[in-house]
Image 1 (cartoon, one colour):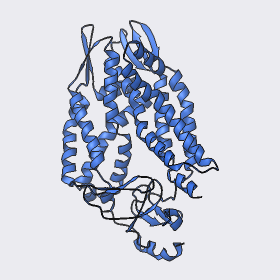
Image 2 (cartoon, helix red, strand yellow; image 1 turned 30 degrees about the vertical axis):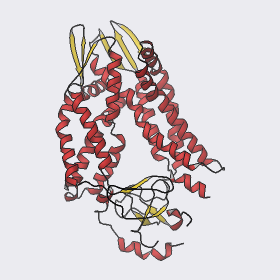
Image 3 (cartoon, chains in turn yellow, green; image 1 turned 135 degrees about the horizontal axis):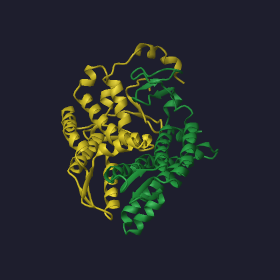
Length: 214
Length: 202
């Protein structure tokens, strides 16, 4: 157990496990609690980059194109992602508006930006690997585009009684962006990027080695 | 071989970047510089506190109106529950069930489930750690779906805006509900699942 590179610790149950080289596309799970530990992914950074660039191209239409049209008493109105948030801000609902802004806009966009800068190597060049990886970990938890799509359907059915509601073009790009986001979440593995960061005071760590052993 | 936890060997896995290091107190991770801790400090206390706040916020979230609907000068205020009942009445039970699950069953189930795990961790009896970890993972996974109602509100506010004639506004219940969502998600983050195994090993 002296070599720290040959063992791995399960993040969910703290079990010490021997690290083995996996075949391609296989994943290691904790034998005690089945937590996903690490995997060998069969994709290249350029593929991740292509996915994120597709996401960037979809962003303008997702954010600014109407998602739903409403026709009521001869007057049309529409809703897009940003308009709802801005109107909530205008009404003084700061908490609700910022939460929706964060989960439906900032976190998904941040995820795209973060993975793009990691996959393209920009994060390493700008010496921002650690902050970027930390940010991506936060964005993972808060990106909720799939919930947004379902809530769109709920809003549609709520209003279908009182007005004529139609789906807008923005919905298509929102749907594709959601699929892209989920694919990125499945494909992206932060571990190899963490390993590129050089360790500080590594020599100091080995000095204390004998005392710390039980 | 008896399964050994890293703590027994004086090893610590960085919670942020996953680097394995020999633990010394008050040390920061040599790779990502975040503070290193064997377990999330005061994990149970934080979880309990955030849970208590969340369950307290459940009251205004469910009792106060989440949407104000102005129709030709008439004000109709809907709480979460009355909105769901209105959907059931207009024969849209599928949608109503989705909203019921997302905005009532998920938040309450989350609070009860996390409270159950915290309580089991405090008792002197051994814990059923497998079942509780599965429960924790389900809670962690479904928690995001309670955002559904807030997204619906933001869409309705943007869509229905005709000045005094017809207008939808968010009510005070929505703010409280946003609080419940944030607090339960933070509580799940603060709960350290490794405590389940620590306790079972004792």
